[in-house]
Amino acid sequence: DAARAIGSITKLMTAHVFLLSDPDLNAPATVSAEDVRLGAALHLPVGETVTVKQLLEASLVGSDNTATMAIARLSGLPLGDFVARMNEEAALIGMQETTFADPAGLSSDNVSVVTDLVKMFDVILQNETIQEITQQSIVSITGVSGRTYSIETTDELLVSFVNQAPYQILGGKTGFLPEAGYCLGSIFSHEKGGEVIVVVLGSETK
Image 1 (cartoon, helix red, strand yellow):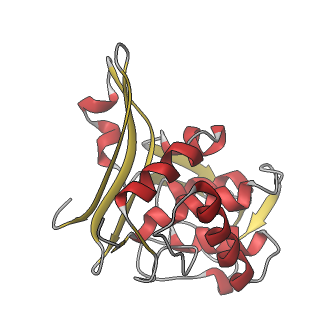
Image 2 (image 1 turned 90 degrees about the vertical axis):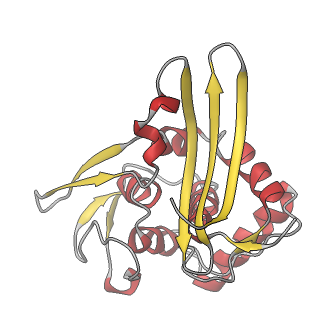
């Protein structure tokens, strides 16, 4: 029941709100200087043009803060309005103890409780685009410049035994901030036993 900072788990709600407007995932999208947020790997340089879907891949697979801010900008909403939409969606899902303060999860004011996050993972990972992206252990993105960027997942469980038959990871997201510790939400399945949603907040180590 303890409210805790959730770090980059926030990015799932950002992707969810963005996809609600049914954007063209194949449309070109250029990383802008205003998108840059430090604190994690910058996988795509300013000025590079990729597809909207590839921005989502950088955000959800590599937990790229700059790509995430680009997604929020491409929504067409002012940043404050976008964050307000994130909180509205959380309320609709029934996340009564959750507050979002920024799209990337860099603020320790992005807080939730594990029971709220279970609801969020249950709803948001039903989106086929988000589910498909968060199942990938690595993505390769080639920009308009011709450069190719290889982005590895922050979720090391995707390359572990819990993602090999008879088990499968159906999607998930990691998070980390000094104030949040190491965080993880994921949906695991067994070919004979259904699905289990696991949320861990505030771990001292990965």
